[in-house]
Amino acid sequence: MIRPARALSVAAIAAGLTMATLFTATSANAAGVNYVALGDSYSSGVGAGSYLSDSGSCKRSTNAYAYLWKNAHAPSSFKFVACSGAKTGDILNSQISALDASTTLVSISVGGNDAGFADTMQTCVLGSDSDCINAVNTAKNYATTTLPGQLDKVYSAIKAKSPNAHVVVMGYPHIYKVGGSCIFGIGDTKRAAINGAADTLDGVLAKRAANAGFAFGDVRSIFNEHEICGSLTTWLNSTTLPVDESYHPKAAGQSGGYLPVFSAL
Image 1 (spheres, rainbow, N blue to C red):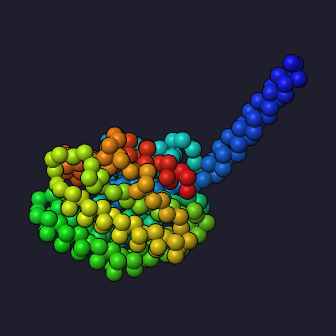
Image 2: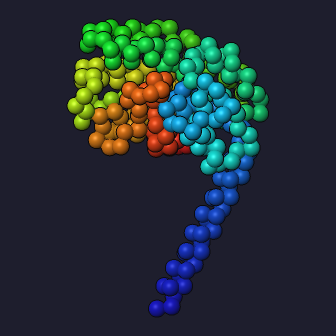
Image 3: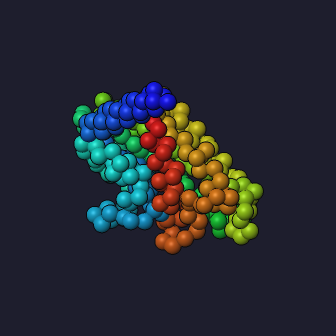
């Protein structure tokens, strides 16, 4: 009766040592990380509240996935320059300077504003089904014809400024659960069209990221049933005040959706 107990005890000690070693290795690895968080409102954390006082209209949130990752891993350095409304041109003109040869980790979400996400959502909420579909088709056409070249410029600049960095490109979730629990608001025709735009955009982002040798963080699956009208706790703001926070992840969407996907990559 003693031997199994002793064996179990030894196994438990060994497991503890293994976990301690793993924790030490992970901590040491994070201690050598120089992390720069670039991007638009989905990376700055618009809609998640708790905005940093010095971020102004960029609305950088302490609930954003980048900030949460920083808190959990304590990297050697952390530069948080993502900004609400940012387009690919803003990354090149205002954010890329945060990178240098010592940067080892970069996250970025960009492309939605270039494709006219905000205007498309406004048209879909206020206009007819046909107005919405036309706006979505215009955005999808932009995403497939013009956006790839703009993304290539951004990704090339990131590689040039931080050649030693691991880069994670984060995508966009579906906004709505089609056939979901909502009684009020826009109908499923518009909801499906908006989700289709997200699919097109994510497809472009994934392809350009792969061509650049970057990882792509697809958040659509993890947001499943957490969309507006989903059966689980909604991780996205519907129409809300302030208006710029509409259709953006709440704090729960950043911590439950974006953070796990980014961390896994």
